[in-house]
Length: 383
Image 1 (cartoon, rainbow, N blue to C red):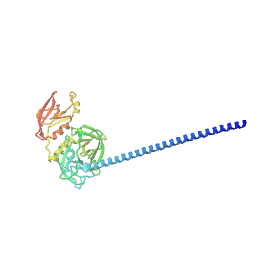
Image 2: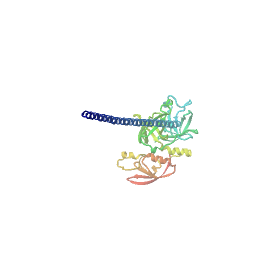
Image 3: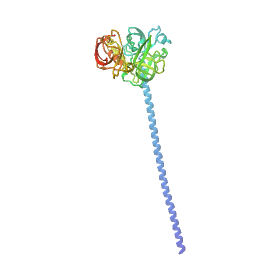
Image 4: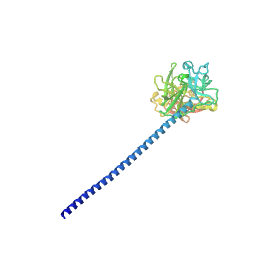
């Protein structure tokens, strides 16, 4: 009996140990399976997430490339449209079929102009076309050459309007130079060096606004005010060409550049001459009214007279003899605060307003004179 009991106990113990090992093995197997499946699921989900992110990035990249391509196409179309409105202008008629020659800049005084109406009105610089009542020669994009009559010009802003006998011409859209900002992208189009480089397009930004520059010529000094400064490349021959905003509208006419520095060029704001263009388009004529003064912008006043502390106005610097202004007692040093109901801060403001008037119209000037404010009525003359 003793031997039998001892053997049974030993067998039972071994069975328990074996059962424990099997149970532990089963638990470990189940645990490892769950752990493995969990890692695999996580890896699968991670792979899916990475794949989705990669696809999204690729889609965004494609969209960006397409947007850039579309924008580039729109800019090219816009520039192409405006380029068709740009003309070559010379004071000397060429015997050939075009005024564009190898030595055109020096021999012909080649410059640029831009068509501003379908019936042949052309805007340019006075130093390109010549003064009022003179003639110049205009070549269109298709090679046709016309004799143009200069109908209007103003040396103080170096602008002119000429007319050719043509119909159904492409013409530039006029923008609003009062609502432009420093940093905006602009394009200049012109004929910088004659035939080989006609209708060259350069790009840049608006570098500054309301610039005043002094021009010394023939022992005299003159000032051009309210100019748009740009770093778009401007060369001899570009004069009179359009300065174009990103929307394709013309915001200025390129005029001068600083030869002692790179990337500094200037354009006359289109709003200065817009009233005149509109009068020609509407009535076919323009009788220019005149006040007979030249004044400095408000921001120049502190440099001229530090005792004047004004929040508005333009400083009268010159008064023409026998002009309407001279007959009213207006004097150099007076500050014009308003004309009619228009507050003045720039000579450009006054000039634009006078351009909307006709000779014989009466205007009221609000003037700061002898440390007090007074009103002066002026009947505009004809320039």
